[in-house]
Length: 576
Image 1 (cartoon, one colour):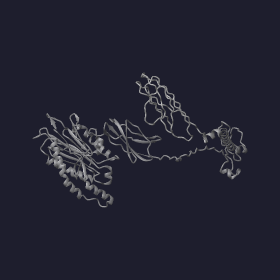
Image 2: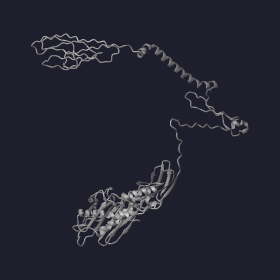
Image 3: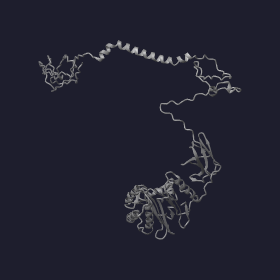
Image 4: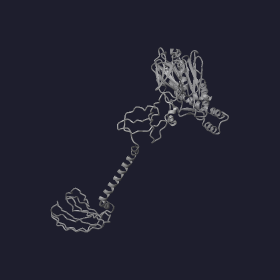
């Protein structure tokens, strides 16, 4: 249904409805549902958007829309608080599930469905039919409500917007506009309770609410924009329906005061003299300028619809695909669109497709074509038949630095072409040319082989040592630091003995120079460490003679007598 503008007193409103492109092409029922009711003092509406993933979302949208309008008109509670109203609405939505479930169970499936599709639909039937919604009731001031009243409720992501004397007031609604929230015929409200907003229409004799608008997400392109004119609203509906991701559309707008002047304004006229010319790098669109136009919209249709915004004519389009395409232009005045021009068609030829080059293959380079001079008065009988069909052409080696040339053997009775004199190559020379590189490469390989053999012979002794390494004898020696910090260990029992003469001096000085020589077997792989543990008493001049006896695995450790001062620790390092 196109835009309908209603002038009933005291309410002025307009509405529109459109199915998505896929739904309309398939001849299916739309998922949106819009219901309204009003008299001279009260206006009630419900806009529902069925969830297509559920069992026939349009079924839930219609059931819910009719029930909301009836509940808002006849069963509204007397309390004026949002909490009271929200609790009553939530209870009413829960009570609706019984009748809705029975209606869903009785809904027949289309005849001729495939068994798999029928099974999927039965599974959805068990989960129920779902829908989102926005609804409201507006009571004009008078009687027991001198300030009037506006009640709004919603679940889901359908849009709900308000305007006052200072501009848009939609941020005052609060609540959640969440896709996950919805009403289910089996479970009732899903993911929370309904969101509620209540406000007076006037305050201190001045209007607070001037207009409101509600629309489904199929018109999301209107988000953030001022409400368009009637012509602009219909253009937005048409553009949304032509979109690839189009969705069902339902729209309602209500005014409590004078209708804005732009709502019924005439659109800008269509541009004239629209032409489309093809070029190597694209296409050029030209048209006559339109008065009061701030910009232009250029649209091309070649199976898909693509639009561009141009500041002024002309406008260069990118390269067009092969085939027939249609282009049209309309003027824009801020956000208000004008009338589309007539479509201009253009047939674009297909570009030649180059032959693919396989991986590792070198593209062929076209050879130059040499024109063959033909005598004007020559006769076919003056030359053999084979010459009249194909001229004799043979490559000639050019001189260094000179460009390659292809000489042509003239036909009998013709003058040969004038070419610079060069030394012609004789047949023996042509035979030697491909042989010389072969001989050079072979000689180079022989020379490299000879040099490698000579080097191997000169270094034969080194190669022998590498293949058969000599026996290695390791002679470890241990040289301790002159001032080690000696720590006792219990890892082994040493055999050396030490004799010391103590004195009263408490700072002994010990000089130890053990020399260890060990010659293991060539096949020994164990690690040997000497362990030295002297026993000493406090003496001013200790003298010790130690003769350690080594086993196959020993740890070298020195344990001095207790002294008043400990020296820094040094770990002996075996030297191979």
